[in-house]
Structures are given as structure tokens and as C-alpha cells.
Image 1 (tube, rainbow, N blue to C red):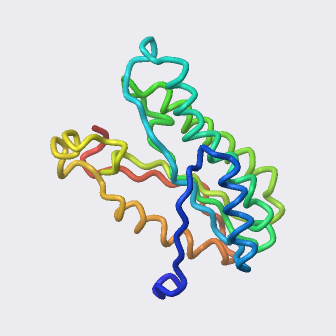
Image 2 (image 1 turned 90 degrees about the vertical axis):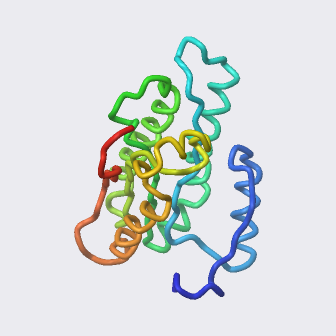
Length: 191
């Protein structure tokens, strides 16, 4: 019951550290907790032109966005299949819209999108839902405080995105057609 705060637990970890993901899974299992729905919502961005990226920045962004999503999904996949649950990945409209300075960020989100699309086909007969959410500009830590202030009123709130996901979560355990993709944008469009 998502309305009962007694059912909510939080755990802090660095998702770029594979060992911490394994430790979290083991800790949850030792507490008798398995995952029904995994929401992949980790992400960061470095905004700069492709030619100015260092290999270290590339590796850091790739590890945070793509590798951590792979690792977390793989570690909890058996739980999700066993519980006939689902996977929701929060991606970005940058997967199909081009934004200058976002080539590496867009590539990591595109990689996740493709990975989840293929995983959906590999697991289609299990009955689990795999949903890609392509969100437009959302007021999160990916944006600087200055940009959030500059574009106030044009950015969605994280709560807006969460409200869009709740109905999808409710369909995961029902025997109805699956929702595979959802695009959410601010009413005024891309920034």
C-alpha cells in the first residue's frame, strides 16, 4: 500500500558501485523483501560539446546512467520475473530530440531505451511489463539552480512525472494490454 508510510524504506547507495547494488539486493533478501516493480531513475548530465568531452567524463556519465541501470536491472530481474512485476525506466526525450551539448547524455539514455526494448522482447512470454518513460525538461538536480530559475514555469516537477507513472504502476499487475512507452513533456514543449 503506497499510502502507508510504514511500508516505505529507504537505502542509500552509490549506483556506480556494482558491489553496493549486490549488497542492497542481499540486504533486501535477508529482510524478506523482493522487488515487484523496479524504477530505474538514476541519471546525470554533463552539458558540453562532443569535442570537449574527456574520456573520464564519458566514463563517469556512462557508468552513472547506462551501466548502473544495467547492473540494477540484472540484479533484481529474477525477483521481478518471480513476482510477475515490471520495470519502469525514466529516460529522456533526448533519446529522439537533439539538444546541443547533450550528445553523451542522449547516447546513454538511448542505450538504456534500446536495452529495455530488447529485454522486453526477451521476456515477453513471462508477462512482466517493461516501460520506457521519455520525460521532457524536469526540475531536478540535472539542471543548475540558475537554469531552473530561468525556465521556471517551463519545467515539469518531479511530482508531475511521478503522477504520470502511478497509473502505469497500477496496470502492471493487471491482465490488460501493456503500456510500453510514454512521452511526457512540459506544455510549452522542449527548452
